[in-house]
Image 1: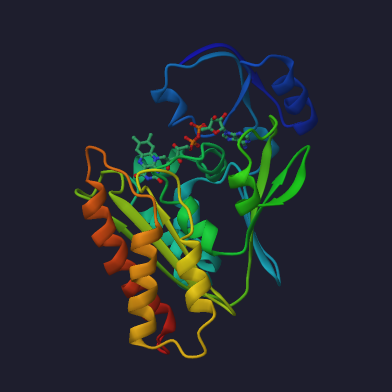
Image 2 (image 1 turned 60 degrees about the vertical axis):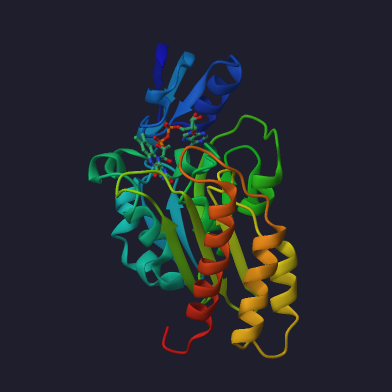
Length: 266
Ligand SMILES: Cc1cc2nc3c(=O)[nH]c(=O)nc-3n(C[C@H](O)[C@H](O)[C@H](O)COP(=O)(O)OP(=O)(O)OC[C@H]3O[C@@H](n4cnc5c(N)ncnc54)[C@H](O)[C@@H]3O)c2cc1C
Protein backbone atom coordinates (compact mmCIF):
# COMPACT_ATOMS: atom_id res chain seq x y z
CA UNK A 1 0.00 0.00 0.00
CA UNK A 2 1.18 3.49 -0.78
CA UNK A 3 -0.36 6.39 1.14
CA UNK A 4 0.05 9.86 -0.40
CA UNK A 5 -1.63 11.90 2.35
CA UNK A 6 -2.67 11.26 5.92
CA UNK A 7 -5.64 12.94 7.62
CA UNK A 8 -6.40 12.43 11.30
CA UNK A 9 -9.61 13.72 12.86
CA UNK A 10 -11.97 13.21 15.77
CA UNK A 11 -14.85 14.67 13.74
CA UNK A 12 -16.73 11.97 11.82
CA UNK A 13 -18.51 14.47 9.57
CA UNK A 14 -15.12 15.88 8.49
CA UNK A 15 -13.84 12.34 7.98
CA UNK A 16 -16.91 11.50 5.89
CA UNK A 17 -16.52 14.60 3.70
CA UNK A 18 -12.86 13.72 3.17
CA UNK A 19 -13.82 10.13 2.32
CA UNK A 20 -16.14 11.32 -0.46
CA UNK A 21 -13.64 13.90 -1.72
CA UNK A 22 -11.66 11.44 -3.86
CA UNK A 23 -12.44 7.87 -4.85
CA UNK A 24 -9.00 6.80 -3.65
CA UNK A 25 -9.54 8.18 -0.16
CA UNK A 26 -10.12 5.51 2.47
CA UNK A 27 -10.78 5.05 6.17
CA UNK A 28 -7.92 3.23 7.82
CA UNK A 29 -8.83 0.79 10.62
CA UNK A 30 -5.92 -1.09 12.16
CA UNK A 31 -4.30 -1.09 8.71
CA UNK A 32 -3.16 -4.70 9.19
CA UNK A 33 -4.84 -5.93 6.00
CA UNK A 34 -4.48 -2.72 3.98
CA UNK A 35 -0.72 -2.86 4.56
CA UNK A 36 -0.54 -6.13 2.62
CA UNK A 37 -2.37 -4.75 -0.43
CA UNK A 38 -1.01 -2.91 -3.45
CA UNK A 39 -3.53 -0.06 -3.04
CA UNK A 40 -2.52 3.49 -3.92
CA UNK A 41 -4.32 5.64 -1.38
CA UNK A 42 -4.75 9.36 -2.04
CA UNK A 43 -5.66 10.19 1.59
CA UNK A 44 -5.76 7.70 4.45
CA UNK A 45 -8.28 8.91 7.00
CA UNK A 46 -7.49 8.01 10.60
CA UNK A 47 -10.47 8.26 12.95
CA UNK A 48 -8.61 7.05 16.05
CA UNK A 49 -9.30 10.35 17.94
CA UNK A 50 -13.07 9.77 17.60
CA UNK A 51 -12.75 7.20 20.43
CA UNK A 52 -14.62 4.41 18.70
CA UNK A 53 -12.62 1.78 20.55
CA UNK A 54 -15.00 0.90 23.37
CA UNK A 55 -17.33 -2.02 24.05
CA UNK A 56 -20.47 -0.88 25.85
CA UNK A 57 -22.95 -3.33 27.34
CA UNK A 58 -26.52 -2.07 27.71
CA UNK A 59 -29.61 -3.90 28.96
CA UNK A 60 -30.45 -5.20 25.49
CA UNK A 61 -27.23 -5.17 23.50
CA UNK A 62 -23.46 -5.11 23.27
CA UNK A 63 -22.14 -2.19 21.21
CA UNK A 64 -18.65 -2.46 19.77
CA UNK A 65 -16.98 0.70 18.44
CA UNK A 66 -15.60 0.22 14.93
CA UNK A 67 -12.00 0.89 16.03
CA UNK A 68 -12.11 -1.76 18.77
CA UNK A 69 -9.26 -4.22 18.36
CA UNK A 70 -9.94 -7.93 17.94
CA UNK A 71 -8.08 -8.64 21.19
CA UNK A 72 -10.31 -6.23 23.15
CA UNK A 73 -13.28 -8.27 21.89
CA UNK A 74 -11.61 -11.57 22.68
CA UNK A 75 -11.25 -10.67 26.38
CA UNK A 76 -14.55 -8.81 26.86
CA UNK A 77 -16.70 -10.47 29.56
CA UNK A 78 -20.07 -9.55 28.02
CA UNK A 79 -19.08 -11.01 24.65
CA UNK A 80 -17.53 -14.08 26.28
CA UNK A 81 -20.87 -14.89 27.86
CA UNK A 82 -23.16 -14.02 24.94
CA UNK A 83 -24.04 -16.89 22.57
CA UNK A 84 -21.48 -19.15 24.27
CA UNK A 85 -18.75 -16.64 23.44
CA UNK A 86 -18.54 -17.69 19.79
CA UNK A 87 -17.21 -14.32 18.57
CA UNK A 88 -14.38 -14.41 21.16
CA UNK A 89 -13.70 -18.06 20.33
CA UNK A 90 -13.52 -17.31 16.60
CA UNK A 91 -11.17 -14.36 17.14
CA UNK A 92 -8.88 -16.38 19.41
CA UNK A 93 -7.93 -18.53 16.38
CA UNK A 94 -6.89 -15.60 14.18
CA UNK A 95 -3.11 -15.28 13.78
CA UNK A 96 -1.21 -14.21 16.92
CA UNK A 97 -1.75 -11.55 19.55
CA UNK A 98 0.28 -9.03 17.51
CA UNK A 99 -2.28 -9.00 14.68
CA UNK A 100 -5.26 -9.22 17.06
CA UNK A 101 -4.01 -6.13 18.89
CA UNK A 102 -3.89 -4.14 15.62
CA UNK A 103 -6.80 -5.41 13.50
CA UNK A 104 -10.18 -3.79 14.21
CA UNK A 105 -13.76 -5.01 14.06
CA UNK A 106 -14.51 -2.15 11.61
CA UNK A 107 -11.88 -3.30 9.12
CA UNK A 108 -12.97 -6.91 9.58
CA UNK A 109 -16.60 -6.16 8.68
CA UNK A 110 -15.91 -3.62 5.92
CA UNK A 111 -13.40 -5.92 4.20
CA UNK A 112 -16.15 -8.56 3.66
CA UNK A 113 -13.32 -11.10 3.50
CA UNK A 114 -14.28 -14.47 2.06
CA UNK A 115 -11.94 -16.18 4.57
CA UNK A 116 -13.42 -14.30 7.53
CA UNK A 117 -13.76 -16.11 10.85
CA UNK A 118 -15.50 -13.02 12.25
CA UNK A 119 -18.43 -12.58 9.86
CA UNK A 120 -19.55 -16.20 10.30
CA UNK A 121 -20.32 -15.94 14.06
CA UNK A 122 -21.64 -12.38 13.69
CA UNK A 123 -24.14 -13.60 11.08
CA UNK A 124 -25.74 -16.21 13.36
CA UNK A 125 -26.31 -13.56 16.03
CA UNK A 126 -28.71 -10.63 15.80
CA UNK A 127 -26.07 -8.17 14.54
CA UNK A 128 -26.55 -4.72 13.06
CA UNK A 129 -24.16 -2.04 11.84
CA UNK A 130 -24.36 1.71 12.40
CA UNK A 131 -22.90 3.90 9.66
CA UNK A 132 -22.20 7.61 9.92
CA UNK A 133 -24.32 8.50 6.90
CA UNK A 134 -26.57 5.50 6.20
CA UNK A 135 -27.58 4.86 9.81
CA UNK A 136 -28.46 1.35 11.01
CA UNK A 137 -28.66 -1.76 8.84
CA UNK A 138 -28.62 -5.46 9.70
CA UNK A 139 -25.33 -7.21 8.98
CA UNK A 140 -27.16 -9.70 6.78
CA UNK A 141 -28.66 -6.96 4.62
CA UNK A 142 -25.28 -5.22 4.39
CA UNK A 143 -23.66 -8.48 3.24
CA UNK A 144 -26.23 -8.80 0.46
CA UNK A 145 -25.57 -5.31 -0.95
CA UNK A 146 -22.92 -5.64 -3.67
CA UNK A 147 -21.92 -1.98 -3.81
CA UNK A 148 -22.56 -0.18 -0.56
CA UNK A 149 -22.00 3.58 -0.87
CA UNK A 150 -18.77 4.83 0.72
CA UNK A 151 -19.42 5.40 4.42
CA UNK A 152 -17.86 5.17 7.85
CA UNK A 153 -18.77 2.22 10.03
CA UNK A 154 -19.24 3.64 13.52
CA UNK A 155 -20.29 0.62 15.58
CA UNK A 156 -21.42 -2.98 15.52
CA UNK A 157 -24.42 -3.84 17.69
CA UNK A 158 -25.13 -7.35 18.91
CA UNK A 159 -28.54 -7.88 20.49
CA UNK A 160 -28.44 -9.81 23.78
CA UNK A 161 -31.08 -12.51 23.37
CA UNK A 162 -29.89 -15.55 25.33
CA UNK A 163 -29.06 -17.43 22.19
CA UNK A 164 -26.97 -20.58 22.27
CA UNK A 165 -24.05 -20.76 19.89
CA UNK A 166 -21.39 -22.96 18.33
CA UNK A 167 -18.34 -22.03 16.26
CA UNK A 168 -15.67 -24.15 14.67
CA UNK A 169 -12.76 -23.24 12.40
CA UNK A 170 -11.08 -26.03 10.47
CA UNK A 171 -7.48 -24.96 9.88
CA UNK A 172 -4.33 -26.79 8.88
CA UNK A 173 -2.00 -24.91 11.21
CA UNK A 174 -2.62 -22.55 14.13
CA UNK A 175 -1.77 -19.43 12.09
CA UNK A 176 -3.48 -20.36 8.83
CA UNK A 177 -6.68 -19.10 7.23
CA UNK A 178 -9.68 -21.40 7.61
CA UNK A 179 -10.18 -24.39 5.33
CA UNK A 180 -13.81 -23.72 6.21
CA UNK A 181 -15.64 -22.38 9.28
CA UNK A 182 -19.04 -22.92 10.86
CA UNK A 183 -21.36 -21.07 13.19
CA UNK A 184 -24.71 -22.30 14.49
CA UNK A 185 -27.08 -20.55 16.86
CA UNK A 186 -30.42 -21.35 18.46
CA UNK A 187 -32.97 -18.94 19.86
CA UNK A 188 -36.54 -19.41 18.64
CA UNK A 189 -35.10 -20.44 15.30
CA UNK A 190 -31.87 -22.11 14.29
CA UNK A 191 -29.35 -20.20 12.17
CA UNK A 192 -26.40 -21.79 10.39
CA UNK A 193 -23.62 -19.98 8.48
CA UNK A 194 -20.68 -21.53 6.68
CA UNK A 195 -17.71 -19.33 5.78
CA UNK A 196 -14.42 -19.65 3.92
CA UNK A 197 -16.08 -22.16 1.53
CA UNK A 198 -13.66 -20.65 0.22
CA UNK A 199 -16.15 -17.90 -0.73
CA UNK A 200 -17.90 -15.56 1.69
CA UNK A 201 -20.13 -16.92 4.47
CA UNK A 202 -23.66 -17.95 3.50
CA UNK A 203 -26.54 -19.78 5.10
CA UNK A 204 -27.72 -23.16 3.75
CA UNK A 205 -31.31 -21.95 3.38
CA UNK A 206 -33.03 -25.27 2.54
CA UNK A 207 -31.39 -26.99 5.50
CA UNK A 208 -32.33 -24.18 7.87
CA UNK A 209 -35.92 -24.12 6.61
CA UNK A 210 -36.15 -27.90 7.02
CA UNK A 211 -34.93 -27.99 10.63
CA UNK A 212 -36.97 -24.96 11.69
CA UNK A 213 -40.14 -26.67 10.42
CA UNK A 214 -39.66 -29.85 12.49
CA UNK A 215 -41.73 -30.28 15.64
CA UNK A 216 -39.04 -32.40 17.28
CA UNK A 217 -35.34 -32.11 16.55
CA UNK A 218 -33.80 -35.55 17.13
CA UNK A 219 -30.61 -37.17 15.81
CA UNK A 220 -32.34 -38.18 12.58
CA UNK A 221 -33.52 -34.62 11.87
CA UNK A 222 -30.04 -33.30 12.64
CA UNK A 223 -28.45 -35.81 10.27
CA UNK A 224 -30.94 -34.94 7.51
CA UNK A 225 -30.32 -31.21 8.02
CA UNK A 226 -26.56 -31.69 7.72
CA UNK A 227 -27.00 -33.78 4.60
CA UNK A 228 -29.33 -31.19 2.96
CA UNK A 229 -26.76 -28.48 3.77
CA UNK A 230 -23.88 -30.49 2.29
CA UNK A 231 -25.84 -31.04 -0.93
CA UNK A 232 -27.19 -27.52 -1.37
CA UNK A 233 -24.07 -25.50 -0.54
CA UNK A 234 -21.83 -24.19 -3.29
CA UNK A 235 -18.35 -25.21 -2.19
CA UNK A 236 -15.16 -24.51 -4.08
CA UNK A 237 -11.58 -25.74 -4.23
CA UNK A 238 -8.40 -23.81 -3.47
CA UNK A 239 -4.88 -24.52 -2.20
CA UNK A 240 -6.26 -25.42 1.25
CA UNK A 241 -8.85 -28.04 0.25
CA UNK A 242 -10.97 -29.46 -2.53
CA UNK A 243 -14.74 -29.05 -2.76
CA UNK A 244 -15.41 -32.75 -1.98
CA UNK A 245 -13.41 -32.55 1.25
CA UNK A 246 -15.24 -29.33 2.19
CA UNK A 247 -18.54 -31.11 1.50
CA UNK A 248 -17.67 -33.88 3.97
CA UNK A 249 -16.66 -31.25 6.56
CA UNK A 250 -20.01 -29.47 6.15
CA UNK A 251 -21.89 -32.66 6.96
CA UNK A 252 -19.75 -33.47 10.03
CA UNK A 253 -19.56 -30.00 11.59
CA UNK A 254 -23.15 -28.94 11.01
CA UNK A 255 -24.19 -32.12 12.78
CA UNK A 256 -21.84 -31.34 15.69
CA UNK A 257 -22.95 -27.71 15.85
CA UNK A 258 -26.64 -28.62 15.89
CA UNK A 259 -26.12 -31.24 18.60
CA UNK A 260 -24.27 -28.68 20.69
CA UNK A 261 -26.94 -25.95 20.47
CA UNK A 262 -29.73 -28.50 21.04
CA UNK A 263 -28.12 -29.90 24.19
CA UNK A 264 -29.42 -28.73 27.56
CA UNK A 265 -26.04 -28.39 29.23
CA UNK A 266 -25.09 -25.19 27.34
C1 LIG B 1 -1.49 -11.69 8.29
C2 LIG B 1 -2.96 -11.64 8.52
C3 LIG B 1 -3.65 -12.83 8.73
C4 LIG B 1 -5.04 -12.81 8.96
N1 LIG B 1 -5.71 -13.98 9.18
C5 LIG B 1 -7.05 -13.96 9.39
C6 LIG B 1 -7.78 -15.16 9.66
O1 LIG B 1 -7.25 -16.26 9.70
N2 LIG B 1 -9.13 -15.05 9.85
C7 LIG B 1 -9.79 -13.85 9.81
O2 LIG B 1 -10.99 -13.80 10.00
N3 LIG B 1 -9.12 -12.70 9.58
C8 LIG B 1 -7.78 -12.73 9.36
N4 LIG B 1 -7.11 -11.58 9.08
C9 LIG B 1 -7.90 -10.33 8.91
C10 LIG B 1 -8.04 -9.56 10.22
O3 LIG B 1 -8.76 -10.33 11.15
C11 LIG B 1 -8.81 -8.24 9.97
O4 LIG B 1 -10.11 -8.58 9.56
C12 LIG B 1 -8.17 -7.39 8.90
O5 LIG B 1 -6.83 -7.14 9.25
C13 LIG B 1 -8.92 -6.05 8.72
O6 LIG B 1 -8.89 -5.29 9.89
P1 LIG B 1 -8.00 -3.95 9.93
O7 LIG B 1 -8.36 -3.22 11.16
O8 LIG B 1 -6.58 -4.33 9.72
O9 LIG B 1 -8.59 -3.17 8.66
P2 LIG B 1 -7.84 -2.25 7.61
O10 LIG B 1 -6.75 -3.04 6.92
O11 LIG B 1 -7.45 -0.96 8.24
O12 LIG B 1 -9.07 -1.95 6.62
C14 LIG B 1 -9.71 -2.99 5.89
C15 LIG B 1 -10.81 -2.35 5.01
O13 LIG B 1 -11.85 -1.83 5.82
C16 LIG B 1 -12.02 -0.42 5.60
N5 LIG B 1 -12.35 0.17 6.90
C17 LIG B 1 -11.69 -0.02 8.07
N6 LIG B 1 -12.34 0.58 9.09
C18 LIG B 1 -13.44 1.17 8.54
C19 LIG B 1 -14.52 1.94 9.09
N7 LIG B 1 -14.64 2.21 10.40
N8 LIG B 1 -15.47 2.40 8.23
C20 LIG B 1 -15.39 2.14 6.90
N9 LIG B 1 -14.40 1.40 6.34
C21 LIG B 1 -13.44 0.91 7.15
C22 LIG B 1 -10.71 0.04 5.01
O14 LIG B 1 -10.88 1.21 4.23
C23 LIG B 1 -10.31 -1.17 4.19
O15 LIG B 1 -11.01 -1.18 2.96
C24 LIG B 1 -5.74 -11.56 8.92
C25 LIG B 1 -5.03 -10.37 8.71
C26 LIG B 1 -3.67 -10.39 8.54
C27 LIG B 1 -2.95 -9.08 8.34
